[in-house]
Amino acid sequence: MEKVRIDKWLWAVRIFKSRTLAGDTVRSGKVRVNGSVVKPSTSVSVGDRVTVQKNGFNLEYEILELLEKRVGAPIAVTCYTDHTPQEELNKYKDWFVGKAGTEFREKGAGRPTKRERRTIERFKGDLFDLEDE
Figure (cartoon, rainbow, N blue to C red):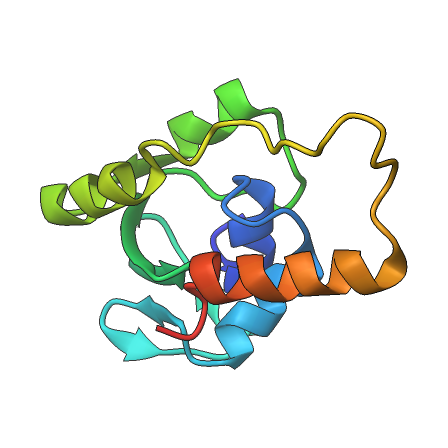
């Protein structure tokens, strides 16, 4: 196997949760291979540099091994080298610190109604939606 589609590779090495999500991200122009914007059907080979804009962060990888099928996380990390700049990693850490706390709802309040849930999702989307940056 000399070449693999970029959307398949991104999904196989677990950078994206689903192949559809990988394909949509590539289609929207947020993935570059060796500096050029690509389509989901673009073939990649060993040694290519892949830049991915995911959740507002610019991640950079170098392909070490080609995969067509999804593999477990311990195997997936051996298939690429992470070249993400330190400032991007720091940006992620700065954003994530303090966000891991559990959500709190008053005792006896029950589950949120549909209207309350939508309000919560809108609020969270405003705070944490980094996709469009």
